[in-house]
Image (cartoon, rainbow, N blue to C red):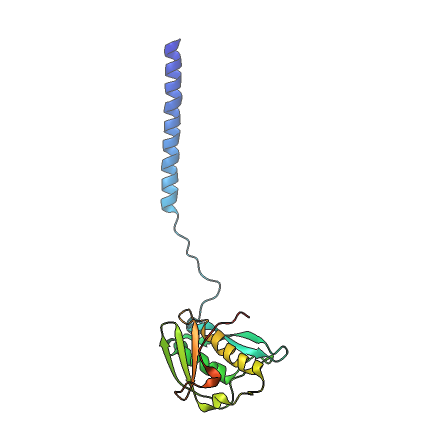
Length: 180
């Protein structure tokens, strides 16, 4: 009786091993026969799209007179070589959004930039001083549009402003990002 139980258990184990082996062989064969399905995007990316990136510029809202962001899609080649100059020149050009206005005075040009550690020095032409000096908010917006735009770049944490190579009383010190 004891021998019959051992033979029965051995037979059941043998049957399970054979079934498992057959299943394993079937699984491996099916896996080898399945080809990898190639996934294709719904829309091809054009060469032009490959060269573009989004930058955030800050301008002043016509309605609230507060700083507001404006996203721009620009060619990556334009910003790689001279990123600071490109961003400042986009601010000088002004917003594309009709609800915003530029605050950098007309005729202003960026003469030079200099990055030292995490502070960038911007050297503007004398036209930069043509803002409304009686309106403290205008000066604050002028500074914050520049600082918030440039500090979108990870390497910049502060901005120093010079006029034609000289520090001026109106813009002394290093300006840091303001929470908006």
